[in-house]
Amino acid sequence: MAVELKDLTKVEENYSKWYNELVVKAGLAENSAVRGCMVIKPYGYAIWEKMQRVLDDMFKATGHENAYFPLFIPKSFFSREASHVEGFAKECAVVTHYRLMNSPEGEGVVVDPSAKLEEELIVRPTSETIIWNTYKNWITSYRDLPILCNQWANVVRWEMRTRLFLRTAEFLWQEGHTAHATREEAIEEAERMIRVYQDFAQNYMGVPVIVGHKSPNERFAGAEDTLTIEALMQDGKALQSGTSHFLGQNFAKAFDVTYATKEGTQEYVWATSWGVSTRLMGALIMAHSDNNGLVLPPKLAPIQVAMVPIYKGEEQLAQMKQRLDEIAAELRAKGISVKVDARDNVRSGFKFAEYELKGVPVRLALGPRDMQNGTIELARRDTLTKEVVSQEGIAERIVALLDEIQANIYKKALDFRNSMITKADTWEEFVDILDNKGGFVEAHWDGTVETEVAIKEATKATIRCIPLDVKEEEGKCIYSGKPSKFRVLFARSY
Image (cartoon, rainbow, N blue to C red; front, side, top):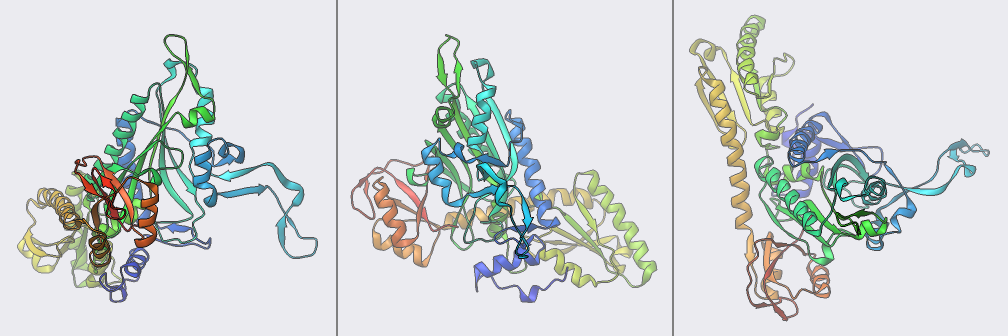
């Protein structure tokens, strides 16, 4: 990969352009031949795999099992839950035919009109309908509950304005779909899973998040309640990073999914669904990275330590590579991912720039003087500092350093996030903060959809969430002046 750091747009000059260039230059993803779809490259997919592995373990630790459901959903399924179809109708890709043929007029390949499907199929935008149609066959008694399923899959939502990782027509995600005997169990499940997402975002991604309820207008289509984790990017915009939905009995009623209680009566099942997607990759990039490239938290970095020999001649290279391989073996024995870069077709300076761009947390450089003195140069990506340290005990030192870097990345993001939460008591203050500072704005809202929509139309800011720890406080809505009992979080968002 040609490293062209000098051509990377500066964060402060054009944040959007910086992001798009960084995704491509760091080898994470690129646009594909299919409009609005992306190719996730090996380095980007390696980060996603790490995310997937950690989350999958967290799901299984909370009793969930993986399953897989069809990519195609009969169109009639969507009509069964009115608010659900309304929420996704404009984004659905529809399969109408199943065969191509050569055009009789010689115009190339065309759809065979005789191969029209009896019922059109929707390419999965989300799986509630196909899953609840399936659950009807799985559930007859209270003994069959709860069902705790998760699916790792791709989905298609026909987006008009796309951006790599943040919003693409096809993306990867996981979607949990659970069935419960009682309302209380389902609510508890929705809350448990949003806390799992919070744990992952903060302790693995190093991204602080605010947990809260979505306003009725921002809820998932077909949900009674949506819980969300909201993160703040370095440009002051919010990013919804994961959601967990209490679906009530809406889908059970739509697909007639009932169970026999212990007393022998028939009751509708209670439901949840929850998911995170490759949008987390966008959050990871935008929350931490800088003008030198990616800054990756060690827990999710594909390469945690890159090792570079600085040498003259093949004999020196062989000696240094042997020593670096020994150190690498010590590190791997402690569960650390290492790359010894002994390429002889590029200079060490090129390698340094490449690993900086790719966000590798720690870089070690070994030169001739280090070989004599038993030392090695250690560079940190998060602080861009370097020091010469002893080779003795280097593995233990790096284990501790990776933990320190992980904590430092989180603290930096948390301090920034906290500095970007501002209270507004008047409309003028509200607009001024949005236009000149950004971030989250704590403000009173009268609780109506009309006011929420009016604020969005006037400022492009939405209610990101009603925080779970919100405190009651008498006040007046910043827009309507009507009474309000607490503040909600507004922000402009991705």
